[in-house]
Image (cartoon, rainbow, N blue to C red):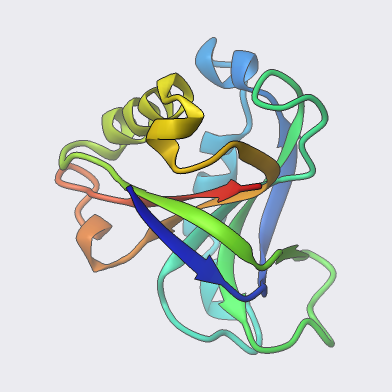
Length: 158
């Protein structure tokens, strides 16, 4: 397993509270967040951005993988000062992260598959126990075609 040590960083974007059961039964909010960000070209309106790779942050976990969490889709930024009211800022804490790369295919297939794989991994396979402080997905140049996407998931470890 690829384990990386990261310093913390901020992500600014659009967020909502959701949980895995809602996402799996079609009553979730993640699809709506993606639609809002892309339809309204909100990424272009995020100030102080550090790049163009979209980051999806899972944070504020209530009860591990089975409870509610905050899902934030946005961009890493150099500063959270003076962000417009329509945006939310979240800090991704520094620490150890297991980096898991998805297969390549339709994003609607590869994202749930990679999370199912992560959730079925033991602490030994993952490189440590999950911290449930923050996890995040990186949507870089490998995911520009939604039918041939590949993403990386950074899983926070204790």
